[in-house]
Image (cartoon, rainbow over all chains, first blue to last red; front, side, top):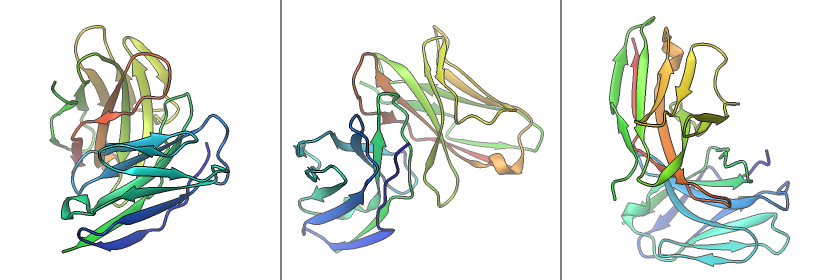
Length: 109
Length: 115
């Protein structure tokens, strides 16, 4: 299973954009890039996923490098409720999600 | 549409007892996944089931752990003769039937404490 590398922690100010990076240099052609987040004491929550093209939804945007070896999750305006651990995960057709340690995002008021 | 439901939310067992964790997937979802999360760690995949079938159990410990997803009723993760190292949060997720890549919807988890 391909691995991802994320910074351990990041900090942001409320109402400012946040760019969460993820490196996945061993990604295969059939791997999708998924992002989930986990708020304290809760189950993970799906954020967004993509294959090659950039993706937008109501929660966030996902920017995927042309060579697919890295991606960036973009929260356009951070709120206090966005403080969570963000996981970047590669998933193939086997539906099995392999989780790393993620990035712990702190949002300052 | 109710989300993924797990019960109990908290479970305390003494060493050697059995733990049964239940998961009801979202309506219309026929795929269920179980994950375990130790304190300060990411989630670890345990098992992936469809109705009445185990599709992938590569993350399940070889002994004491079993999972099922019967035709009727919730999915059950069963841990026999629990030990202190089984203390963790256990999360269940579900996704709909069909091909392609689908996001997984997670329940609130069951926090198992073994004393």
